[in-house]
Image (cartoon, rainbow, N blue to C red; front, side, top):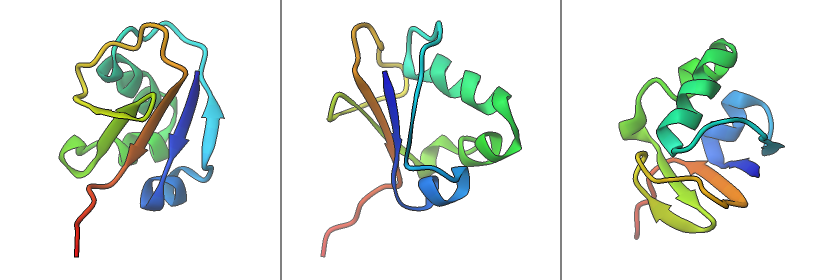
Length: 81
């Protein structure tokens, strides 16, 4: 699966995307794994209210399953104008 980061998430992690091949079964489990990697991930994912997530380009909650997912994207909330 490919992890994709947008806006300030990308800037703070230092990459726009990276492959993931781990045991996480939900987005929440994936986030927990990422937070444990190193401080920059922990900082980005410390306040989930400031993030949105999409699995295969569909907006989901953090408890969403990852079964057969090809892409998980993290980004800040969007505002219209």
